[in-house]
Structure formats: structure tokens, C-alpha cells
Amino acid sequence: MNYLILNRSRLALRPYREWIGEEHRLILVTDAGSVSTDDTLRTAQLATFDETVVLTDYHDNVLVEREVLRLHAESGIDEIIAMAEFDLLRAARLRDLLGLPGQTEQSAAAFRDKLLMKDLLRKAGVPLAPYAAAPDATSLVRFTREHGFPAVVKPRRGGGSKGVQVLRDHDEMWTYARQSEGLGGDDGAPLLVEAYVDHELFHVDGLLVDGRVVLMWPSSQGTTTCLGMLEGHMLYSSMLDADDPLLDPLRKLTQTVLETLPTPGTTIFHAEIFGTAGGLLFNEIACRMAGGRIEDQIREGFGVHLPELCIRALTMGTLADIPAEPPRIGGLALFPPRPGLLRKTPGECRIPGVTEFTVAAQAGTRLHHASASMETVASALVAGATRAEVERTLDELKSWVEAETVIEPEPEPEPEAEPPADDAPAEGTKR
Image (cartoon, rainbow, N blue to C red):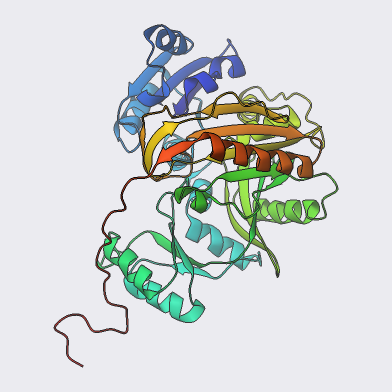
């Protein structure tokens, strides 16, 4: 078989040859940032593939499509493998064009476009927070008049919480509208607006193989969120205990969503669900591995690596045994940057239960707020016998990291003048 791999993950973490086997031909089209900058390591990484194309401006470069078509014409491609959020639609369109098996554009769009996703789920009766398309400023005004504030605006095809913003009042809404491209034009902006709900955030991660769930387990982020990370607050997650009363309701709701959407037969999935005072509300789902070290959290709990399992299922059809429930509870912690000069970072972490602690920034670095929820100064993995034990460890870790990290604040920038609220006349307007 000739497998073409679209890749933007670090090749050091994605040993495709090991996962797929020597008997197949592997063709790699990858982001240059995914390859080691060390010449020796770079050569070794690329040598595991039969042919490679490395692009420095990979993300939205049409050379990706052109190179795939060239490679198919020259040597034939049997299947295209793509694991990253922003490669799913690209890979699906190429499959449809070339008549290859795998996820179609219709399927990928249902998972990538949050408006399309929610429309399909609403028709099936899945509980959701109020939402609407927000292509223009008028749509925002209409939605907030009906549902009030706060409201959450997000790109329909975004990822990593990039571009997501909570609007708390009219002034914030008009500031956002003025700064957002497309909200005042005829073409419209690819945005979605939702009612904000107080919640505990759960994520449900797992693997489908030939339409059968072989792993599905919920975790809780408590009241920490990816949006909070953008404001400099720690995010944590802990897997649920096997006897947690919400375990089965969370899995049942996720199963309903997988059956409602045009889900690929074999795929990793990552769902987000709000736990509210009124019950569970579904947020969104992706057919790829979650970011933020969740793949490592699952490995801490189950002892298996979801990306490897998925690739092996797609190419070899064989899987190692997967336990029905995690032998131990896995947890994670992400510490985002805060604006200022990083003067001191934590040293070796000796807190019991912390299985790995990584510092991603050096003292002397000038920090800014994260632009996406994957940007961290430090991260950690935790394991324990119960969720309560893991969360106690996470609390101790948080206190230790805060005490050991010194960020020298920078002067606050002068605030911009706010635009008029929707019921106030603009300058020079008569009433």
C-alpha cells in the first residue's frame, strides 16, 4: 500500500514507520516546523519515509494540494492519512477528488464547521446551549437581545480556542465587532455566537474502529477552561472514576452524537460537554486527537497511545488489548504565559503523583498572553488511584508552580476608546 501522510505534528512524536510497518510505502508532506532543526535528527526522521515534501509555509499553502496531485500521478496513492484539525478538510477534499477511501468532505465538514455540526445535532434532539450564525454585527445584536449577555463568539472552523471571545456587555460587543474582519461587510464573517452557560467542562476522548467504540472515557476540567488559559489561568483535567454517576450519561450523550453525525468508521474523537445545574449540554466534537497533552493523559490512565492505535487500525487492522476502564486515573496541568518578563522558572518537581513536569520557557523570556490554548510556560502529567487523589495533587502542583515562577509585570497599555453602545448616537448624529 502507498500511504500519503499530511503532517503538522512533531515527527519525534509521530513515528509513522514504526506504527505502519516496513512493508508499505510511506510518502510524507509535512510542515517544516514539524521536523527537527538538528541536521542529524532531521536526516534520521525523513529517512524513514520513501519520499518527502517539506514546506515552510504549510498551513494554507496550495502547494500541499499540488504536491499531493503530483505524487499521486507519479506513483499512485492508496490512502491519505491526516491527524491534525486543520488537515481534515484538506485531506477529505483530496480523497474525494482522487476517488480514495476514507473520510469524505461531507463528513469532515460536519466535524469542522461548528454551525453545521450544531444544526445536525439540534435536529436530532441533542441538548445544546442557544446558538446562531454571526456573519454580521446585526446578528450579534439580534442574538444578545434575545439571549442576553454574556455571549461567546467563535470561528466556525477554528481550533485551540483561537479567536474565541466572551462578550459581557454592549460595549464589549461593539469593540469586538469593530475589530473583527467581515462583521460590517456584505460577504459576512465565518462566526458562531452562543449563550454563555455556567458549567463544569467535561471532555470525552476515545477511538472508533470500524464503527465500534473501543475506548471512550470522560474527564473533567472543573471550572478551568481554554478561554481562561488565554487570560493566563492554569487549566487542569482529571479522568473520572469508574463509579462516577456522570460516567454513563456522558458516554451515552457522546455515543448519540457519534451516531448522529457522518462519523468516519475509524477515528479518534474528542467531545466537550457542559455540566450545568439543569443537566448536560453538548458543546462540540472533533474527529482527531485533542491537544493540550490529552493524549498523554489518556496514556497515563489506560497505558495506550490513541494516535498510534488509530494509525495501526487504519493501516494494519490490528490493535493491542485495551482495558475496559483505566487502571489508574490520569491528569494534566497546563500553565499558560502571562504578560511580563519571566525572571524565574520552577526547578525539578518532586511532588508525589506528578509523573512528568516540563518547563517550556527560559528565564529572561518576555511573555505575552497566549493566542491559543496550546501555548504554555509549563505543563505536567499526574496519576493517582482516584480522581480526588489526582485533583489534590493538581492543587499542590498549582501552588508550587505559582510560588516558584516569577514574572515581572509590564506596564499596562493605555485602553482604547470604546465605541458607542447600540443605543447611543455616534458622534455628529442627531436624535
